[in-house]
Image 1 (cartoon, rainbow, N blue to C red):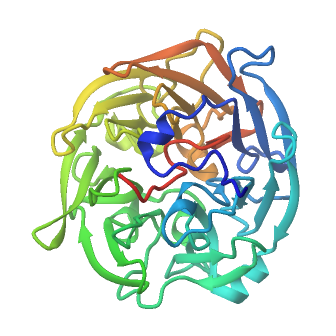
Image 2 (image 1 turned 120 degrees about the vertical axis):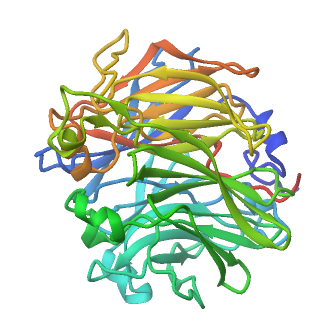
Image 3 (image 1 turned 180 degrees about the vertical axis):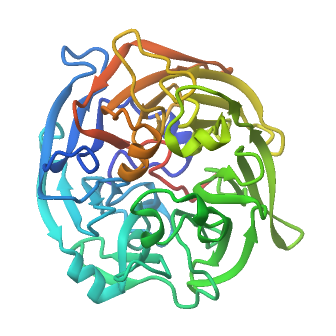
Length: 457
């Protein structure tokens, strides 16, 4: 009898009842450290009943120097159960792009999940030849193929966009967009599959952001729009500007309930007051709209500031990642500047309530872990399927790491425990040290809150 992958679930509610995660895969990089070494994928034991709990139990050493691993994703996930999906796929391969190199690695996590193997490398020349894109970022497993966003073209300018890989061969198929209109900047993307809606966001073109942040570029070279697309026609249908003073509209977190056409996006900095904000985008009265629902102000500070912040005498929160629990109840927010993770109850998405926060690292707080020093600050967040655990890493982007944390960043991953009624506490017995490598995105074996999309409520 044919059997689908047991880690695929038709709805987010069903996924929340899945077995607890036992392994985490973590992208680790050496770019910006001064060490001329290839990046690697680390395998971390997150099973508290295991004798190797909270330790690195495996590594996949890559073949090249300078890839800068960043975001990555699965070849297949619960979207395979959608009406136009391919249920004969399995969640087996990690699709791992180099943000700086535009090279794509395919890593097989089967048959031994603790000892994955590199099985294919797609060189940047092939990506450019078939799509015109470079600097690959977000990976999502769609029902009809693997989608990867790209920040720019081979010259480091725009437009950025999305390319596709074949589900079975991992061959590069081509660029996804057929009609982009005036969309030029790119960054993240996600979708509502039953309603055939794609949503994309904006950072900057590679030539602007790769060498580090230049303040004079903030006013007009960093993005502040969110774009809405007809997923089937591959056509942009609408765009919204998220405040004229706001820059860097980054992570998109649509609600997991596919009957609700809405989601959250973080804006990193306001030119007016250095605050960060969270916006809710939604479809109402036949049109796309957006509303600011959370604002986090900058904190005054006189001492200990990196050069880039000294003129302001303040530490901006720098909200660089957000993640939404599978029940759409809690939104988690990382403050990479000040050094916090916050939990908001978004049961009413128009009126979030702050229900928990934990300090860790940061330019402002500089809060250490009971098991060791924390350089950098919370950056990437990954929420377990049951919503009880949040895994946190600390590197943003190598050249930006060096500007905001010139004393250096040593890669770590910590864990926060979430109360299902609201509340967030630091797990004092869990801290993974990646040494001189920096740590970025985390994916959990079997799935997590930002890997899968669902077609059934």
